[in-house]
Length: 252
Image (cartoon, rainbow, N blue to C red; front, side, top):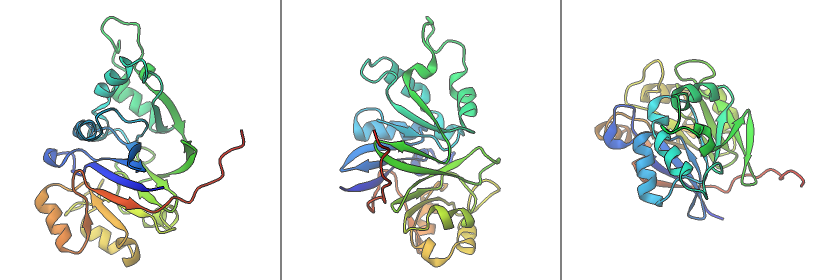
């Protein structure tokens, strides 16, 4: 069984040409779980796969990560085969923020009769959750405000940090089994995002060697990061993942 991480967008909030940060875990070439739903990211997703995601995990609710939700609502709600069926995994601390951000406007449809969440199967998640028989883990990132942003781990395969400052103590546990680490990193850091100097100072060489960087400000910045010897994702680029270390599925 082949596992892949494909980036739909890799840019910071203002780097429209690079696309909003979004990626999809693929299994045997098919989309398996999307991560986030920015506007440009969703456009790239639909252009590549030709249909909405089968499932999604939300890291946090800044608009470059959730601005595609209104389009996704329309795509799901008006398709009887999809309405209410797409698993939407949302950390419990993020769920009320997501509701206020994308779902609280009065009347999801002008004519009434529909709730925004009718289009999805919302699954609040804590430290871990099951998707399609596979257990994934959730960890807190360090972004903007405590308990508002989270990363995702597919044990032995992938650690997706989401937007974050350096979190070496977290990744020691959440990426301690050889995972590919998709990491927020720009050329210059700030109080909510990692800069390359932060990354090189905080992380050991072994961890840096497993990192793929995204959420940078321009193609020129991406080239500057590559010139320093780092792997930097481009829009549409895919990275092979190791086979996840699977947990036993619960007994039926």
